[in-house]
Length: 347
Image (cartoon, rainbow, N blue to C red; front, side, top):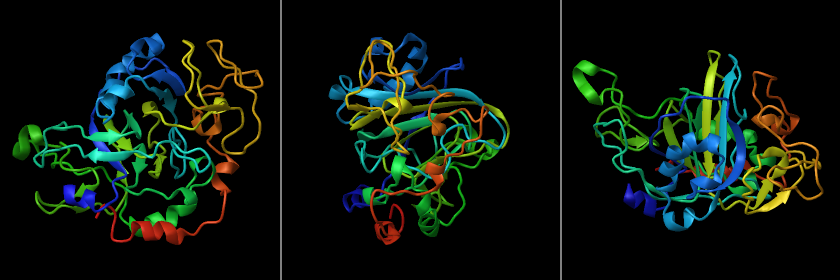
């Protein structure tokens, strides 16, 4: 695997480790800035997520400097109705053509023993990137692909690339490779994750790149680049869901209309803008903690009153023309993505 990384193989995500979620209390914030190594800069109600945050920060190559750096936290705890997704539907990335995050790169992949031990032997090392997890099985799918910047639509939309991705990842979504859930045969190793998340095997030694998207399971903490295609999936049964995301800094633009200001006064280390990131239309937003977005404002966004892609689907279906009508910043050819995927994903 080390040799394949040197050869530039695609590694768009990694399963860092498993995490346990705190008891839900209706918390909700989106891209809230805080200092990743200073718990005092995080509002007290979010301290219950500090262990997960630190598990992420400890995997960053620039760990010392990362502790002094502003990161951006998203927590979403809500009831999700049957047939709806809690978060943004449709294929998308977290990076935008006009305001990209740090892309994120893997330095060392996490080490999951081929026998399966229920946790990562080593969590891996990463340059920047994004961490995410939820407490509901099969509620998020990720693809082992890095979309070229010129193919990313407004707001990170890549739904127009679904056919190309399906061509290169033709197999149906499924969880990452695990030991069979046979306690009699595998004992404590039964059902445990093994090897790399972007690889699969029928036997212990028959490892090959997965040919379909990975369906994240409850408690799996994944790292990914800002141009990794993924999507929030409708739940089959109405249920509570908790979602965690940490963007490890390096953003160019902080969208006040879509984000939560920090009441403790920590500011986004980026240009603060007051327009809708999908439509480009001006939006007036008043921030908390004494911070006012340029031009003043009238209301702060939240998970239920904020941008459409972040709203609780229990209140309204997630529909937005800007997510389905592709409006790119320039011409593109899906051949470019196809070329980027040639040779097999993660080969």
